[in-house]
Amino acid sequence: GQSLEQPSEVTAVEGAIVQMNCTYQTSGFYGLSWYQQHDGGAPTFLSYNALDGLEETGRFSSFLSRSDSYGYLLLQELQMKDSASYFCAVNTGGFKTIFGAGTRLFVKA
Amino acid sequence: NAGVTQTPKFQVLKTRQSMTLQCAQDMNHNSMYWYRQDPGMGLRLIYYSASEGTTDKGEVPNGYNVSRLNKREFSLRLESAAPSQTSVYFCASSVPQGAVEKLFFGSGTQLSVL
Image 1 (cartoon, rainbow over the protein chains, first blue to last red):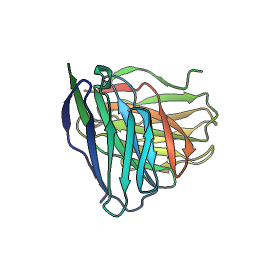
Image 2: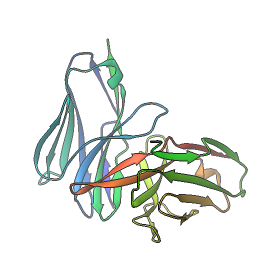
Image 3: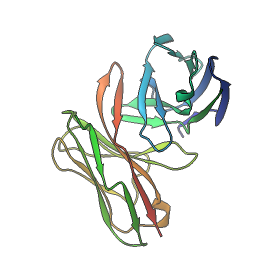
Image 4: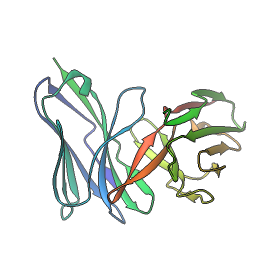
C-alpha cells in the first residue's frame, strides 16, 4: 500500500524554529508538497520539492531526500498565526496526489 | 476572483438519501478533484478529472459518482448515503507546479449522514 507518515502534533514557542517530518512509501514519486490548514479552513499550498535538497520560501523551507523517502518542513521565527495543521503530500503520477494525516502545530507565547 | 466555490457548506442527510455536491472554479484550470477529510486521516482522493470530458477514480471512490459538466464545474453525487460518508468534502482544482500539481481548495462541505 501507499503511506505517508507524519507526527500527529508538535508544540513550539513563538520565535523559535520547528521541523515537521514526513516519510513516505508510495508506488510512484514525482514530488513532495506541503499544505497548511487552519481550523475550519481549506488547505493552502506552501511549497514543494521534486529534487533532493532544500527549498526556501520566506520563513518556510522544505527539504527532500529521495533515497531516504523523507522530507521535512522547517518554519523559522514562529508566530502565533502559524498554529495550524501541516500536511505533506506526494504526487504519485499523473494527477494523483495523496496526503499524510498531518501534523498539528501548536505555537505557545 | 472567487477561486474554487463549493455548495452547500453544510448538509445533513438521512441514510439512503441522495445528494449532489456542487463545485465550480473560475481560474481556467484543466484539472479538478474531490477529496474527503476525516479526523486523523488527512485528505483522501475520491475522484479526479484531469481535463474536461475525463474522470478517474482515486483512493476511495466507492459510493460516489462524479460529473465534469464543463471546464468550470465538477460535481460529486452520493446516490445512497451511508453514515460512513460523514466527512468534510473538499473540491480542488490545480495547475502544474514543476513536477507536481499545485492544488487550490474550496472552503469545504461538512456532511453528516444520520
